[in-house]
Image 1: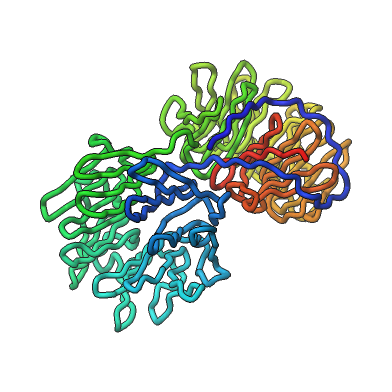
Image 2: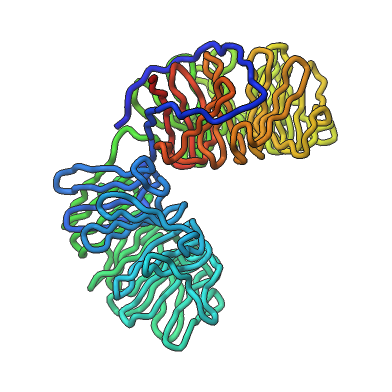
Length: 602
């Protein structure tokens, strides 16, 4: 349940960082998750209960009652980003995630990963053979679960080490394996047989495999649909009647072959077709998966929710008031008590007065990936995106791209200096907007690296940039490489925070560099007790610092003591891209959702 909270910006007080750090007794915290439960990736049905794997956790829908319950990492899931779900019997729930296979025995979750025999922790899908054995398709091959462990596919010619998308068992108990770029493999009593585009497949990719009512085998990919008739493969470009090449999943009944596509749901029986799209009531045409009980009862998973087609009628199930997008890249809090959350390729979210809304900009896609947000002079809001700079000034929108003079369309950060110049760090250098003219700064101007990730303005008016190979300072029009002043081998900077007389630089190595009173200090991995990259830094008015890390959760530093908050404490993910603090609440944008941390006073 989303908790309403009031958030305001605070004036950051001075902070003095001590020379040594040690772990303190962890202060209890209340952690709330906000995840994208609309993007459905897999469906399993038990009686009237529908389980949906999503990019924000697992949903258990009681369809007749219209009620649901949610499982996330706070409940023990290995990850919020799930790619499939299977239910064995009535109570064994298995999920495929980007961090292994999860198993729910009715009371708690258990994770299985590479340490348990999986070829990879990134699991694409799950399936069952005729004997009820569980199989996992991973990015490094397939594996069977038996006696508490996974054992990988083997044998001469087996698809070992390949990105396996799906595993399927036909009526003759033959195993079919679909891969990303190695075609389709079939295992019979005589061994493995591989088929690719040279053998008639539309392409060497296979995302789904099914046996249809006439016993032929079908596979689909981004390029079209292919059919095996027992003698060879035939390809079909679909398909004007589907309106797309991409069928994401295929299912079969006694009479029909069902296509779950990027343009709705379609079913064929010879030349007879059924079609279901948004015009017929589907929650979205962007269909990812489906579960067919019969031709009269079909469950449809889309990127915007669940649709159930029953006797030709459609009923939709959507969980309201959730952010959209699972890979959260940035979080920023403005002075109007609003939280802005940027995502990777799925848009910008705004959290205000307890409610989430999606901000699209003037045109769809212009805010698809927001790396950071800058609140500038004259009420301007500047969005740094992978498609350029987007500036909102009341109802006016301005877009700057490489064609306008900036070094790259991939904008990572930005800041205004004391003279009103606007500086941005990009994937290929630094750009500055001065009196309407863009100036570019590249390696030839003294940059140790053109790969810029962070920037900040200190109290003296100096602009700082962090690159993958060093630190830069800008004073007036002079850009200086400060890296030689620092006694450290690797200086890959991912975050910067300026507080009073100090400037803090978070490194990819997990180390911290501090510039204070003209002196540089380097704090090693033991200081924050992490080797994960420090991707964001935020400060409390009390002087405590928060660090968002790339794999080690969130770390809080106060009075030289560290406290760590991870998935085990209820965080959506240990991969934290951005943090922002205001009025007793830390917001963390993660790979897997957004989390808030509120410390509980003891």
